[in-house]
Length: 59
Image 1 (cartoon, rainbow, N blue to C red):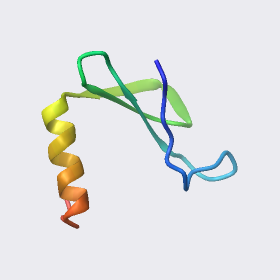
Image 2 (cartoon, rainbow, N blue to C red; image 1 turned 120 degrees about the vertical axis):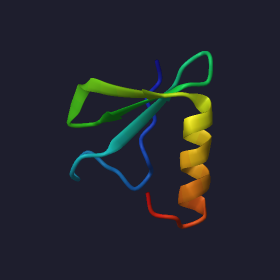
Image 3 (cartoon, rainbow, N blue to C red; image 1 turned 90 degrees about the vertical axis):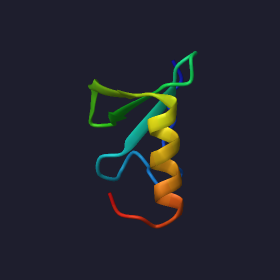
C-alpha cells in the first residue's frame, strides 16, 4: 500500500494526515504519528469530503 502525504507536511512538523487508495477505490486515512490506527472511508464518502473542502465548507 502506498501512503501519500501532503506536500506541506514534512518530517519535522506535527502530525500529518496520510492517505492510501485501496484497489476498489476506498481510502485509508492515518495520522503519521500513529500509523497503526487507520480509518477506512468508501469512495463516495471520500468524494463528498473532497468536494466539501474544495467548496470551503466546514464539516
